[in-house]
Length: 287
Image (tube, rainbow, N blue to C red; front, side):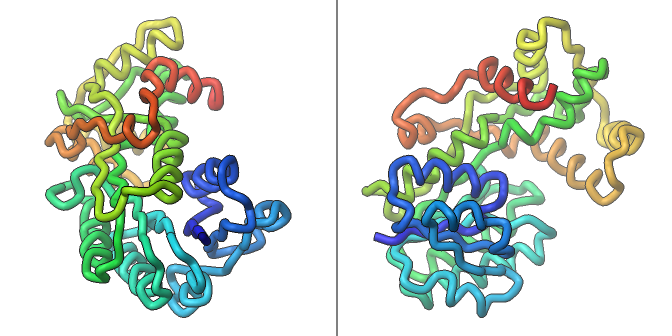
């Protein structure tokens, strides 16, 4: 059985590949990457490195050829670009006649009003349309997404948010990767939708856990979206990123990430890493 992972040199993709290599022979694993030179280390370990560029659909036909099961990791970029890229990738998988597609989606994707949702909704719809058995890995929120805020706290700033009382299901990217690897290699996942969420926490609860890890009080500064945008600008965040951050805060405030499920633990076969321990791991990499 040949397995393929797209975006395998990215932050999530590289973790998925490393997890797979613990249980899957390298000669059964292929990766589709925009820049094969960045995957030379994987090639040296026996992984089949293929050139696959979501902006050049013709390369995906070659990249996906002969594969049985593939994991499509959602791309980065604006919504219009991502919708096109995801749809092209799904259509290439169908032409390659793969037997199973796993896709990294967004929490509660089909009903979500979060501004990030449309590319995932389009991808899920395209995958269903192929008739190929699938699994949707609806990821809640990577703990690593909070690295910038944690760096601010380490520098003496408060935890700044406009998310109000909305809750988030944070978890380590490594655990999302392990869940994806379990679905790609396991059985019984056909046509399943997995809501992958850590324990739901408010911003205050998150800051309290961070404070416990750092051994100091972490004050929370709740502001409105305009003030949040201004604070991000003053912190040096690029102008084009600020609306994205504000949109995320708004989505959290409107409870778009407030989906709880036991799917994560089922796929991992163990409890998720508790938030304090997870934060401790993350802080150790950035402090």
